[in-house]
Image (cartoon, rainbow, N blue to C red):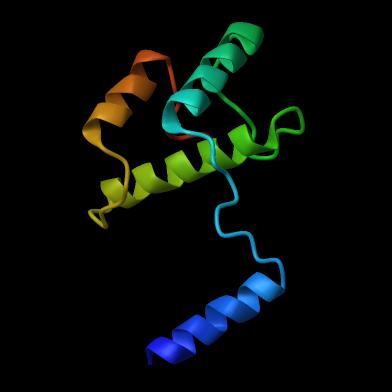
Length: 95
């Protein structure tokens, strides 16, 4: 079983698979969100934000994690992080 896994990992590496698509830290993304708010007057970053695609993906991921928590499915979003985002005016549900 372990050899199969190692072989699969090796194949993915050979194909150029990117294991971490976004290596920025939580704090860096929050700072980018604050900068967006200061520039645009809100925290409604589009999920496809051409100026900073990583920020758009991060915001989409955060909203997804929040929805999972609301459904009782768990997730990686902590209450402390939710409070941080609420403090900067992050919108959880966007129409």
